[in-house]
Structures are given as C-alpha cells and as structure tokens.
Amino acid sequence: MTPLDGLAWANRFASLGPDFFTELPAQGLPDPHWVARSPACAEMLGWPAEWPQWPTALDVFAGNAAWPGMRPLAGVYSGHQFGVWAGQLGDGRALWLGEVDSPAGPQELQIKGGGLTPYSRRGDGRAVLRSSIREFLCSEAMAALGVPTTRALCITGSRLPVIRESVETAAIVTRVAPSFVRFGHFEHFAHHQQLDALRRLTDWFIAHHAPECADAPEPAVALLRKVALQTADLIAHWQAVGFCHGVMNTDNMSMLGLTLDYGPFGFMDGFDPGHVCNHSDDRGRYAYARQPAVAFWNLHALAQALLPLLPIDSEKDTEASTERLLEAVEAYRERFAGQMLGRMRAKLGLDGEQQGDQALADDFLKLMAASRADFTLSFRRLSRALSTPEPLRDLFIDREALDAWLARWRARTAPDAEARMLAVNPAVVLRNHLAEGAIRAARDGDFTEIERLLKVLGRPFDEPALPGDAALPPDWAQALEVSCSS
Ligand code: AMP
Ligand code: MG
Image (tube, rainbow, N blue to C red; front, side, top):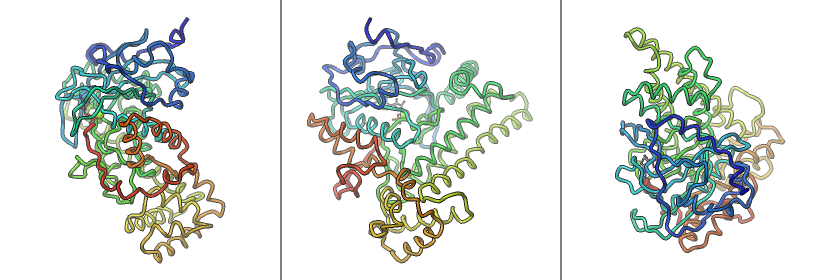
C-alpha cells in the first residue's frame, strides 16, 4: 500500500458533465524541479510533511503525471472584464486535477500553468516563475492574516522559456480551495441561454457548497444573498489590510467569497484611497477605494445571470423576480458597512460601539491619506501609541492634526487595547518589494528566500526577526510595476 491509496478522491465537479469542462491531460514542464512548498497548506489537507516524496509527486505537480483518482479537466466560464462583457473565457491555463477529501472537507486541487486548453484563446497556457511566486506567497500570507482565500500547496519550475515582456521561465503553482466556481460560471450559461445547464450548476452548487439555501422558497435568491454577504465580508477584510486585488473582473470573483486569481495585486504602502495596483488598469476601475463598489457591481452581474431561474414568463413576473434578486444583492451594503466598521473598531482598539466611531476611523484614514502614511505601519504603530506615540508621529506630516486626533482616540480607547490591536494590525504583509526579493533570488536558483518569507508571512502579527520585513519599502521599490502580464 502506498500513501496515495489513502487519498480519497471525490471529483464532484466532474459529475456536472461535459457542458462544463473538457477533460484533458496537462502539458507538463520539462525536467521540473521543486521551487516551494507550503507546510501550512499540506497540513490543512491533512498530508504528512513528507508528501513531496510520495511516488511521482514532483511530476504530478509539474503536470507530467496524475495520481490514481485524479481527473484533469479545464472548466468553461465567461465574464465581465473591466466592466465590459468579455464572452467566453475559461481555464486557459489552469487545470483542475481533482477533489480530495481532507480534515477541512473536500478540497479541489488546481495547477496553473499546465499548458494549452480549449479555453486558452491567444494565451500560451503557461505561467511564469515571477507570478507563480507572487500567487504562492500571497495566498498563504492572506490565509495567515485570516482573509478568505484559495490556498497554495507548491510551485514547480523548469528552464522552459516563456515569452512575456522579456523571456522568463515557466512554473506551475498548485492551488487549493473547496471550490473554484466563479460568478463567471453562472454568467456563461445564462449568456448562452443554456438554462438547463444553468439550473444544474445552481442546484449542484447549492447541494455541495450552500446546502442551507436548498430549502428556501427560491434557492437561487437565497444563494445570491449568501454570496452577497460572503463577498461583503471578504471586501471588508481586504480594505482593512490595505489589499488591492487589481483585476476584480466577474470571472475572478469566487462563489465562496474567497480571494481568487492573484495577478497584479498589491498591499498599499503609503495610503492613497485612489491607489491602483495594476499598471494595466489605466482608468483606475479597480482602485483601492472602488473595490467595495466594484464587488457590488459584480454581484449585479451574478443576479442578472440567475434571473432566468426565476419566473420571467410575463413582464410582471420578470419585474417581481428582478426585485427579489436586487433585494438579495442589496444585503451586501449593510453587511459591508457593518463589517468594515467592526474591523476599524478592532484596528483602533475600540471596545463596544459608540456613535462617533465611524468618524474617528474616517478621520484617521484622512490623516493617513494626507501624509501618504504607510498603511500597515500606521495601524501597527498606532497599536503601541498609548505608551509610545513617537514612531507613529514620524509617519505623519501634520503632527498637530495627528495629536488632536490621538487625544480623541485616547479618550475613546481602552487602556489595555495594545495587545488586542497588535493581534489584528499585522506587522508584515507581502509588500511588492518583499516578493521581488524572493523572485530575484529564485531566478538565480536560490529558493531559500521564498521559504524564509513564507515563514515570516505565516506569523504576520509577530514582529519579524529581520526588521526590514516590517519596515517602510526601500527607495528602489518605487520603480516596481505590476501588470496583468503573468
Ligand atoms: P485573468 O484575468 O488572469 O484571471 O485571466 C483571464 C482569462 O485569460 C482566463 O480565462 C485565463 O485562463 C486566461 N489566461 C490568462 N493568461 C493566460 C495564458 N498565459 N494562457 C492561456 N490563458 C490565459
Ligand atoms: Mg482569472
């Protein structure tokens, strides 16, 4: 008996049938090597530390082999990109390997960068080492921050050249989630008027991932409401850690409210509500401050896709059905506002709820914006400002205004707030320059910096051993640009 015999594959998505995917093997990486593995993700799966030594593990996660029970397939979906209907997209370079049982429930495994699929369009089916390292590190960093996210198990690499703005090398990141179903899956079948498939997908998703919606008078409406609430929680979490996704297209929106498809994401350094992390987003559609509204817009696209599942035989029916879907989406607003205020109260160390809390939080953010004060450091240093305000004051230009705000804050906050604040205001986030350091070393064949960063990012609320990991970005980081190229 090999350890692989102990893995139980469920593959429930595959039961949906051929309307939803194409089964095909990966085009693997030639002569692959390990780049990185996440012990925390393996632990979540219930796999022992020696899993990389399981038979053919390297080849499986480099796309050159499959374990018994795996069923590689590429899914089809569509979506709105930058607010415009983009038509059919799909897993152009991701391949669903299968769904394995774990102590955390069934988990789907996907490799990203495993070659061409019927949905590759003009792409080459590959992912480069650079973007794979960024996705790997950020997935695990977000999980450690407590932000809902897809996880990353490992990266494999190869010398295979891949052409982007320059010639880079290929890699495959393996990601893990209870489901990779996106808003765009529903949009796809609605747009193509495949109502039977749309209904099957909805029933399937509810049965396996939202069973509490099954008994609602209108399960599709209940599902939409659930997704709206989960999305609100997710975006509030992003805003509270200064995370910008970069490409909030509807095909990158998870039906489980997970952070999905890490591309040109970024954690803000100096606070600027208009910050746009994606160099390709020239209109700033996905700027930090717009993320909450964009998620709301995306939920409307999902509502539109679900409409055909409700009575629409007459104009009156259609109007009433639309009304019920809009009401479900509307739940997002109140939930987001409540979650956001709750997170800000925790970040500021405020006990209980008082009238002026929103204004107190808003005023701190305004002061931060006026000084372009570092987002992560402002909250981290505020956590210690009851006893040592100087390091915080150093981040601000208008110190008088800050002192006036601090006086209001002191009057409102509990004297023992420090420990609680340090537990919610991270010391370390994956700043672009940290990822860049790991990428540059990896290109030279040194993967130790990835491993080191993974450990540091796994304990984001602890002061790191190297002060540089929690410090302001160095000057050279200003020149870093991230784009959709990956
Ligand atoms: P993204 O905005 O990165 O989430 O990708 C949008 C769409 O483009 C998805 O359908 C991806 O699968 C596809 N895609 C992105 N990069 C590639 C690539 N290099 N090869 C094939 N398809 C790709
Ligand atoms: Mg995507």
